Each structure stands twice: as C-alpha cells, then as structure tokens.
Length: 187
Image (cartoon, rainbow, N blue to C red; front, top):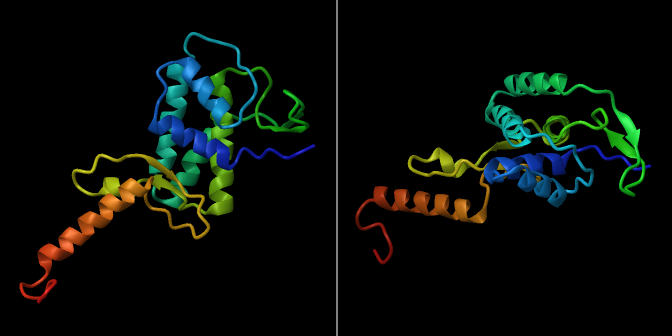
C-alpha cells in the first residue's frame, strides 16, 4: 500500500485549471491525467460547467488573504465534499487512500481531491503558500495566475520568471525616475 495524500499535485492541477481553463469536458479529463489521476469518470452533460464552479469556489480560497478566512472557506468546501476515506486499488496503482465515495462524477471527485489537497498543502507548507501572482498587484499588469508555492524557502511571489522579470524592470525604472540628476551612471 502507498499513501496518496492528494497534496501538491491536486493544488497544481487546480491552479492549472484556473489559469488555463479547458474548452470542454475532455480537456478537463486530459488535464487530470497530466497531473497523475488515472481513474475514469462517468460522463454527465453538465460536467464542464460544474467543474468550472468547483474551480471558481477554490479561487475564493486562493484569494482569501486572512488565514482564518482561508481556513473557513476551505473547511466549508471539504465539508461539502465529505466522504469517509477508503482504501482502493485501481489502475494498477497499488493500494492507496481516496477521500471520496466510489463512482462519483468528475466535478465531485475534483471537488474532494482539490479541497483535501489544498488543505494538505497549506497545513504542511504554510497558509501563505497559495496566492495570486504578485505582478498582478501592479496597476495595469493583467497577470492573475495562481501561485502554488512549493519552493524550499516559501517565498515564491510570481507565477513565472517572465512576471518576476517584468516586476524587476518596473522597480528599476521607478528607482531611475526618482534618482537625482547627476547621480546616475557616468556621473
């Protein structure tokens, strides 16, 4: 038996869906496979919009800046996805835990996996390690990507090197504008 705690990969899956929403149900299921989920899901005609609601509800947790508010929102999501943990052995993965009832729809499974995974990520890594890209805090910067901080030091602020570089250029230009004449290069 191995323990599959739905931690990091579940949060990274949620961020991937939030940042690059698939155009249809097949795209959602393909994304779950990219992040390591191997099980199949019964198909329902409203899977795509219901999964979008799961992701939007999760974004409310991402956007909560107060740890107690974040915990309250996440606890409510986990309570709504409540199922007792169970051992399972599917798809030649070996025995592992599932945090949901069997044969649930794609949106229900993602609701359970993402909420439990987010709780594990925040409690093991730190309540501050899930947020929006800091580049988007600057006026006119459109980045609203989710940052799942899995770094060693827990200080990841930007979703990408591109956003970090853009912010560094802005800071440099702001310093240059405020620098007294004659104190720049070559002075």
